[in-house]
Image (tube, rainbow, N blue to C red; front, side, top):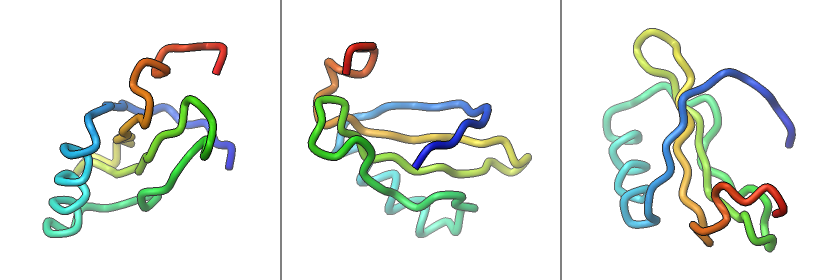
Length: 75
């Protein structure tokens, strides 16, 4: 899946990301893309989801399987 849109994003540890997913569901937050795995099996593998804030700004939340690859342009 390829897409491009202006967004604010935040990366967190898996445990924090899992708690965020629960809260998003509990609070009925507007979800654009439900959590999914990107780059499966590759070093930059991540779980990510896209939400909207109350003003329809796009927010991307993610957790990296290998956090050290977050800024690695070679992956």
